[in-house]
Image (cartoon, rainbow, N blue to C red):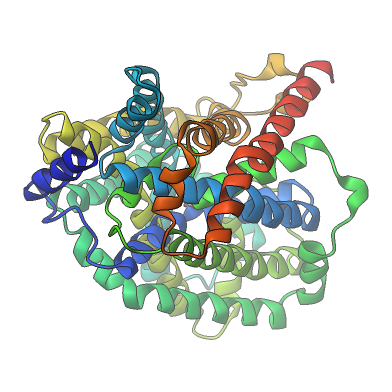
Length: 475
Ligand code: TRP
């Protein structure tokens, strides 16, 4: 069946993007880093850290990233590469290979993962749209006038306008569709060779400026001196959810890129590079944001607008800030769009295997995520007093529909998805199949990986899920 699957992947390579295999491990690493590094690092990580009290959240996030999300990432890539097809088919075929059943249940799970990728894109596209507004503002007016009051007002004015949000979101989706449908992903991967280091340098520059000109030492304490007395289940659950989100795991999305990874390349080494790059960007983002937050008296728990309020203030004060600011938002856009591509790719690959043309599949994915994105757009204005989780106790009482989606993903969907993936790689897949895929690494790597996906990752996830929901209904 492996030959058949490989044949399929090779057969469909004539469609669209000119070959569904990366030419090297490096090609995979570039694309996977592109998928992992995005708004999750620069936008979501800082505001979640702020909402969850700082250092303890950061530490838990790092622990969960290493101990739980990394093994799940490896599992996804491994399942994908062994199948060389889209997530639903990779799961179904291998499930029926291992269990002698039809694998229809796993197919449905794969489809659910693909669809939840579009749910992520629904809000991802809206927030990515905001980046255009800030680039445009930087180019036309500069950031000079951005003091805290002005910055908050700018964000509020943008979020209040439904047409503006729709146009910005639409622009982002159209650009993503163009890239996915035209298959210029290869070109993007090539461009990422210099874009990634450039973005890294820009971030480091921003961090240095923030640490020197802002409240550097306060930010360092806030981010890296954990106060264990503040340990709560919701903080831990948020950290786990963010660890999954930032590595793009839990929905099978990384199986798609795994399917394009050459057979002999080391999965573990590739995934380690991805995780290191991803973590570096998140920590740099935190170090860039919080010195400004404290220096300007902003609220660390200010929510999803945090970076959009904070960064322009930094650009206003720093020498060459307008150029730097526009460049920064331009790179943030690139980081976002390489993740957005990876959010559409599983749907498109799956539909392609079902005989739907690449362009049509892309349009279906785009239409679905655009429509669902209306929920996010309206959450910042018309529906900002709609609270779908009011019944679920105090903790979620204030959540808007948009926050319901992100909380639902982080606290429920991604952990459950990760649990299923751990089950698949740890208990459904026989050891020889796993060992075979990890043969580029020393044998202890495969042993450690199997321990992780059979025992500590699922047990950790399950424990947090149970405590989280028990706590939600009791208190
Ligand atoms: N990791 C991406 C980011 O941090 C977002 C993301 C979450 C994602 N799940 C995904 C991207 C699945 C691609 C596929 O911005």
